[in-house]
Amino acid sequence: MNLPAVLPVLIVATSMLVGLIIFALPEQRTGLRSTLNLTGAVVKLVLVIVMLLGVLRGQHYQSDLPLVPGIDLVLRVDPISLLFVTLSSVLWLLTTIYAIGYLEGSPHRSRFFGFFSLCVAATAGVALSGNLLTFLLFYELLTLATYPLVVHRGSETARRAGQVYLAYTLGGGVLLLIGTVWLYSLTGDVTFTLGGLGDSLQGQSSPALIMIFVLLIAGLGVKAALVPFHSWLPQAMVAPAPVSALLHAVAVVKAGAFGIVLVLYEIFGIEFAAELGVTTPLMVLAAITILYGSLRALSQDDLKRRLAFSTVSQVSYIALGVTILGPLAIVGGLVHLVHQGLMKVTLFFCAGNLAETLGIHKISDMDGVGRRMPWTMSAFTLSALGMIGVPPLAGFITKWYLGLGALQAEQGWVLLVLIGSSLLNAAYFLPVLQRAWFREPVGDWPRERHFGRKETAWLLLLPPLVTTAMAVGAGLFAAMPISPLQWVQFIVQGRGFIP
Image (cartoon, rainbow, N blue to C red; front, side, top):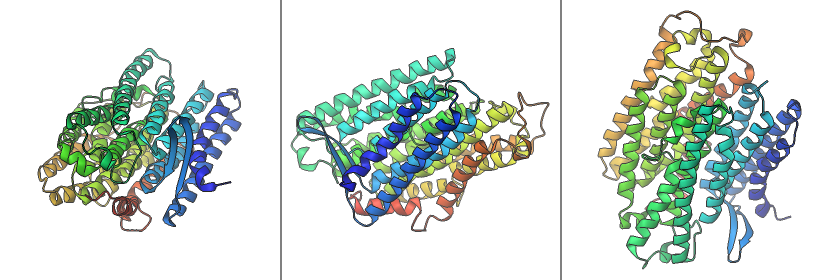
């Protein structure tokens, strides 16, 4: 068996097979379903660690599966794909633990966990894609796998949100398909290549290439929630908290942001994209999205909707960083793939704990909740402060490198965007913390389930505490060799991401 050729397939197949088996399980087989979920998550994480160690030793992993004559389904492993697939594997395990506790006693758990696993398989496929066609297939599979999760509750509100989600994401997929086919017809190649396709793009019609770029970025921008393609994301918050955590931290929005990185650096190449004049408009669009999302978050009383608009803002830090032509800004943008994932999954875990334990969905009902649920609100507080950019938390590392990168590239206006965004982050997070910690509780909470001395069920409490520790550690120990920052610097130095 050629292990380097098999491992990428196994990474995708692990969660896909688990999902297919779970579909066949009766609802009452709770123990077996949980065992399968956790075993699949652990096995995937072990395989990712094996590949991580192999890549550090210079090992190359790639699987080529014939799709149609002349075009292969390509799964490959390199430092940037490992960044994304490691994040998804770690958070899948933690979100699985959380989902088991959150959905205890609820109906349709086999359906939920089946699609949940397919969603993770599609995300792994997106991360490991070796060409644009492979990426497109898994990108669309991700849409189909997440739709049942969005509408899981079956309410009229959930169905409407699912319709909006499908309209946006399938429309984005059509744009991505048109751009991919058009690019292939011009170049005969859609392989993700170090530095971009280079010679294949030279000599092609600039207007055609600009249109292709616009189509690709628009298709990816839907899932990345770039303005004006963002409206589906706040509406999708009717989904259960584990789904919201997965959508915002690692699956859908990150697939879009990751795709933008690949189009810029491994399809067009950042220097050629700059020559076409397409990087500056994308940079400006990302800046607008950052400020717009923060402004909309200010007026939301529903906690999950406030967090959703925060995601609209925060994910665009990635697009902003990778369009600034400076190595430090690229580091800031790429490392935010991890930093935002850790902080945002924590925030949604905590929002889910408040809803499940106390029936709290609105910020106006959170007075004094820190006294009832101190561990949950401590995790929420640290992640919120990280989002604001308080040192030495992970969000500060992101903004520090984006700011330095902007100065390095002589894009001083970006500093104003970062400062404005941080002030807005503080404006929509600090009032939540003030209510939770410094106000007296008023009356009874809408619904309280008594979990004893643990403040909530341990399956709901453990994941946010772990992700909080990881987010704090990513900032506090950013200079350590195993930190996300150091891995991203390894990517930027070794992948030709420096113009």
